[in-house]
Length: 258
Image (cartoon, rainbow, N blue to C red; front, side, top):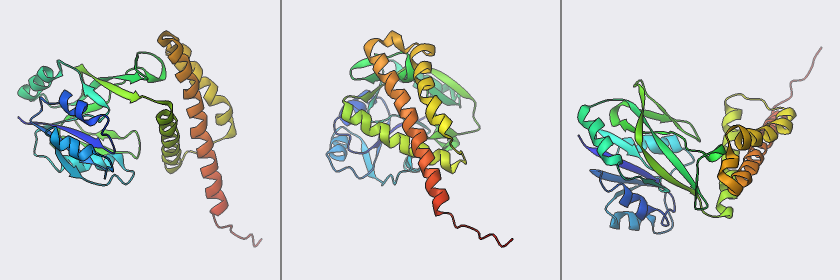
């Protein structure tokens, strides 16, 4: 049984070497690079990865599906460039492979924001499906892409560290990018916004993150990120609202002949 670790990259020279080192136990490390303009590809090759250049074109699911066609490994583990595989994961992965326990496996991902591990609130650990038999899965979705598989879903005991934000410029840039993508996705899915969502959903998003999900236990940063989670929610619905308004304005008006 062969294991490939798949890493999608775009200008990740700050992270790529440490990411590859953390996954050095794999039989193959495959980097699918979205035309990076920095030294990502060069550094990845020097660290022992096989690098294939393939434009993302805004479609994360398509990029992950493309990666599946570029390896003959029996199992794949997807790791983002800003993630690290924690020690101890290899033994569990090898055991699953040896037993041929075919399933779509979730793995705990601990977010590290501005140098602090986040255990509560909107940035609490999540469980993405990342460890999969290569021949039994595909991906779909423009943003926050998800797996589609007939296999049962199971959870690994291992974990990833996700170095999600290191500076505030990056944080706000990503917030804006994801708000735009989510607004477009919801519009495509037929959601029609109302101003009431813009009015009420943001404060509730903060309350859910900071109180219900106990973001206050993450200290000062928990409060700050809770506030900004509410602001992200407002951005998403404002963008959706005006995208829908723009579509209505561009729609041809049918004359009334009555």
